[in-house]
Image (cartoon, rainbow over all chains, first blue to last red; front, top):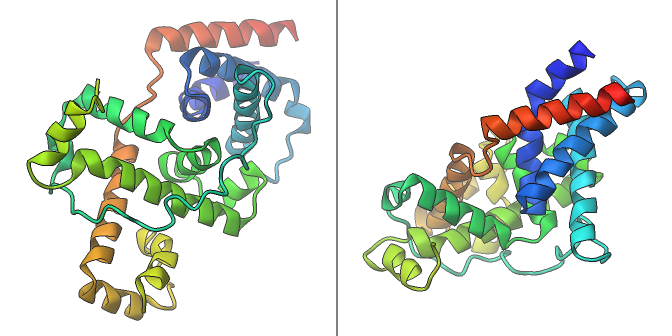
Length: 190
Length: 77
């Protein structure tokens, strides 16, 4: 029990962050953290040493998160394959360069609002790949194993997630006077 | 090399994979194509910004509450 408690302390922040990326709702993310650790505890005997404990735990947390999303959408199926067949983001459209220091354009909490709002617009199947690979720092292979996807599928989703986020952030960060003020005027940042 | 071919390799450039077979071609394309250079640099910045901002922080009080709830449930197992 003490050893498991240590694991909870070690990974709770990551599990909460991953859950938030998928469910986009704090209450649901809290439930996911509890359910994921409880499930991990119940199934500890099934944990095979052939994968890292962390990636095993992340897989449980991702599945719990998708179940929560499904419940919230009143039974409609949600999977990591949802909405990923779009061509959006496969080709950049906004080719304006960014301000040399885009982070200086906004305060800390304003920036966090922009980043949350921007990632919310991505389909869950893109959000989760971006969160695991680029935010949590899992390798492409670990991300594929965790999500039950092939390596080429992870690469394809990651590229499109990155390009879509870049495209959406451009309206806030692009060079010149227009960018920040224009986005604020359109109610882009609250 | 076309912009579409460059974009197909964008992840390898972003991940700075030393073993990119077409690295010389990609770098040559970058020197000649401002659009792809901007796309590469701003996509790299996108990743850096998301990595460096904790947008879903777990506050200490919530963390303690979750921790207590998890351990209480586990003890009942």
